[in-house]
Length: 358
Image (cartoon, rainbow, N blue to C red; front, top):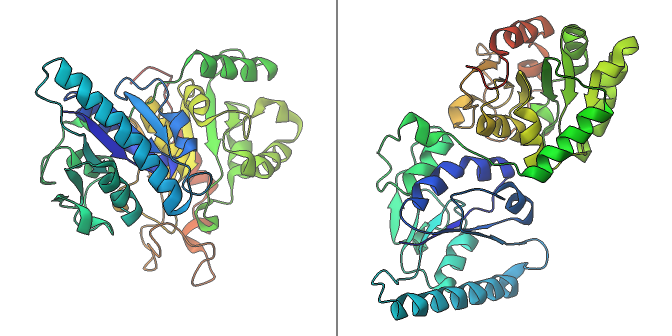
């Protein structure tokens, strides 16, 4: 049975959808509708038959854009049906749609494509258009919740290995990392990655410059993130002083998939509650995640085999937001300010492990 997975959320959510994709691929071809940025993350993934970019804020915005995409997909699946019928394949039905992103827009797209079976969470805003509603268990990791969309009723327990996200960097990604490291004069030294950024200001731990100085010169440090994190990388490099050459700036210089390839070479990643921790989970990189306004219990913590969490569990005001507000509602931001550099450095030493070793 063919599947159409619609997942147009944040990049981290797309990474956490890969266990679902792997499970569905055992039943038949899996197509994925996702954002243009996320489409590149799924390149080379063996579970994905094809990726369909959906620029819902650009060329495909609004109802006209949705209709054009739906019409193109319907034409594709009807042609596939005709080929299957010609080959005397009884399994020639339209694909089952799995609404990993639960908006009414995604549900409407699946309906317009002609998917007779549409599966999503019972709590989603698009649930009125679903033909099967799956229990949303807030106690589970989101990778497990998404996996359950393909399992049926939302109560099945996935095997441990089934909930592990996976990404597959290609040769171009590896070459980009090789060039970056060669330009920095890196030669097989123990490497720690730090990811100081986040789309939400209150989720950015403020002491990455001091942490980097504490980890140097025992470790070589690489700063990962997007173009918006370049100023934070500059602060880290400046704080390193005379040994700043031991800090490698990768912010804005690698694609997310190439960043995943880079993380696979690192002994550990130190990150906020943001997308890099999911890249690390997909590559098995030991991870120390720093949580402030959010908590791992929301279902978005690290899934790396070796992991640790830094956070203030004793604050009554935590968690204050499911995503993390831009400003602390109480104006003190204790959840991040009171996580010390010494505590984080100690946890780094506990989780750091040579690549490809457990």
